[in-house]
Structure formats: C-alpha cells, structure tokens
Length: 293
Image (tube, rainbow, N blue to C red; front, side, top):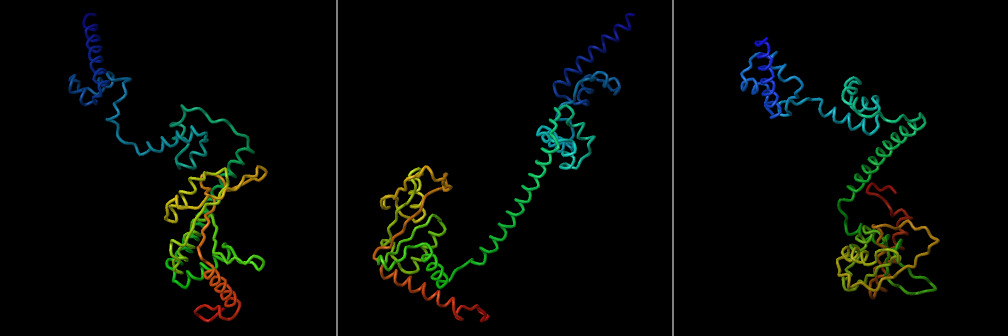
C-alpha cells in the first residue's frame, strides 16, 4: 500500500511539474529533458489536456481557408456557398465552422433576388471594365495635337458653348461659360494658341446660392492659375425649391465664366473660322489622307 501511494504521489508531482512547464511555453522535448522522462506514453499522460504552445505548431496550408470559411459563415453563407467560393470539401467546412451560429434561412424568392443581384452586379462590373478599356484606347489616339487640330477643336468648342452675336443684339463679345474642368483647360490652350495675353482674360464664377461659393472660387482659381482675389464678383443663382437639381454635392463647383477683353476682332475671326469649317465639311474638301470623304 505504501509503494502504491508513493508511485501515485510521484506521478502527481511529475504531472504538476510537466503542466507548469507546458503552461510556461515549453515544448515536449524541453519538458522531457527537464523532468527526465524518456517514456512517451508516460509523458503523454503527464501532459494530457494541456494544449501545445502556439510557437510549436507547424504552419497549416489550410489555416487561411479555415479563417476565410469562418468569415463567410459569419456573413450568413451556407456550406454550399462556402464550398463554391473556397473549393474545399463540406466535411472540412463543417469541422471549421460547426461552433458558429447557423445563418437564418431565407425564403427561395429572397435567395433568387440575391443571386440575380449578384449576377447583375457582375455584369455591370464587366460592362464598366469594357467601357474604361474603350475610353483608354480612344484617349491614346490623341497623345499629341497639332496647332491646326487645336484651332479646329477650339473653334468648334467656342461655337457650341460660347456667346454668339445676334442680328438684334450686335455685341461681338468673346464670352465662354462651362462647368467641365477639361473643357476649360482646352479652351485656355486654344486662347494661348491665338496669342491672347493673360491680362486680357477676366474670370468669375456662376453658381447656385446653396453651394460652397468660396470653395468653388478657389477650385477654379487653382485651375486657371490666378489668385481668387482677381476674380470678378460671383454671379449667384437663386434656388428654386420646386426644382429638383442633380448638380449638388461636394463636386458641384458651378460654372466658370471667361471673358476676353476687347474681343470684337477675335469674335469676327471665330465666326469666320466656323463658317469656313461648315463649308469645308459639307463639300468634297473634307477628306481623309486617302482622299475619301
């Protein structure tokens, strides 16, 4: 009886030592060497129920899959949906996520709507990618521009967006208004091509009263490269509460108005260029390098 009690006492003492070392972060080999236990079966009994420290665990190729499977389960995905996304077996998925709450069952019509929405979102993404690809390819066709091309582009741009003389109101002013920064940059490049000195240009902002007026003025001043204090008085548009405007939000900066001082002669040239372009485009003069219309 004394021998049996001694053995039991020795085992419990060893177990306390082994457990303490394990919880201190030692490996099996380190514990074995410390307490001088060479029998693996005995060491297993001493360490029973004590998990190994993290640093002793070998990297598992499926750890990332397991983590992703748990994320998807918490998002409410079913085993089938997780399997489709991760490509692993349902038995593995079950093992990884069985402690997590089951997702609420959706009625078939709701699931169909969600599936249709996902398909449509994918279709829209594909269309947008194709749209951007076409735009990039088209932009590369104009990696440079000749003075002649800029003259034509600027003339057409002004005639579409600039003020024009009327028989009943003979003004001949060169006045241009637009809200597109790209259009403004091209228009200013055209004026530089025509030799219009910067001091002949006057700027002002035209904007709705509900917008950030000072912010818009700073934006346009930075774009054209002048001090905001040089701008003329802002033209404020009164807001009609019955009108539903779409040009709202932080990106709304109104329109920039650009006036060329002493522009009567320039206006006459613009009108002449436009008339010549229309005439040339509607006759056999409008040809490509191969001679075809």
